[in-house]
Image 1 (cartoon, one colour):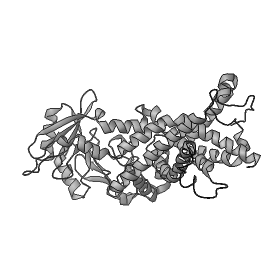
Image 2 (cartoon, one colour; image 1 turned 90 degrees about the vertical axis):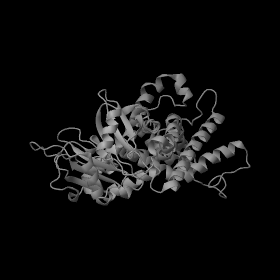
Image 3 (tube, helix red, strand yellow; image 1 turned 120 degrees about the vertical axis):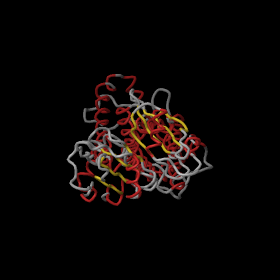
Image 4 (cartoon, helix red, strand yellow; image 1 turned 45 degrees about the horizontal axis):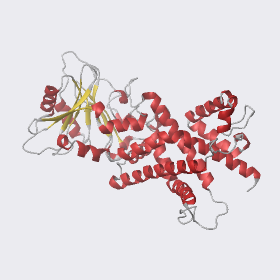
Length: 455
């Protein structure tokens, strides 16, 4: 191997190594919670079996009667109603109390029994989702998860470079692990070979997961909308609303509909709001998928919003209904999405393990378990080779001297702005801290007196 190539290899290995050491604790959390969340509906069906399942006997009560029963259990404002998608499924009524706590009451639509009440903030899978999406730390956690996902993509790219065979005589150690050459070789191969085979699936899950982030994901949504791939005029009954309120602010809707402008209801003197019975009948008339939720108006000018994003992305729908006239103001379906919206919707349902059923879940589980295996084997390799007085990483070198990896980092910084910000932070930490503390500099194997353009 030429000296220049060895230096480039060492520089890339160093970035791969430190990115891994820094982000893998969070990445391990994301992999574990992601593996669990793939089976959300199966887990909830088992946990809340007594709340979900009912016996279909006789004619069901009206939605309004079911809501009244729920309000007898919890004193507060009704915010959501979900009819059972099948004859043996209970109805759900979400109620928010004066202190802002949200509860879901499960109602047997046949005998009117309140089957149980759940505090929405304490539902097991909702907690798992919050850990997976924002580490239970709000906006800060969301940005941290986004940064980890972006740097994981960099780890995959640098890992493929380090894996790329140069003088291999066969596929052992490259496409299949070597099982009979000792523990050290086996662990290295399990890390590298798994990384190669799993890289495509990992990048897919990382990119589709990034769609939910508050910075990069919102940016992609805005680009999708402004590019003309957003909302066609055909979804509006009448002119499109001029509203600064987004649909995501009034209802839990599919990714493609989150930036959809929320219309307003026309307030006429003496007119009373329609009942939930009328809204449910309207949903049946326009053939909304039966897994829909009805979100109640939040104000006198608000609208009823029907939202469903079920297993199949093709069944997604977001419908706004005037709360006084019962007229459909907007009807936004998968068929109305632009090409980008359709790709995103399909990507998200695959990410959640829904689009292709059990096969989809097992595929996602394999990706999560493969990621966990790579984290464990990578950490094991580091422990085996790490000297007592340092991290064991190659000596630092100016990455700007290596055009290809430097160019890749610049491109990724433009695509993922948080990566660029983190690189600036690394540069400042190196300049202002690492260079001033000899023990830390030695432990990290940082060259002394490097110039300010070292990266």
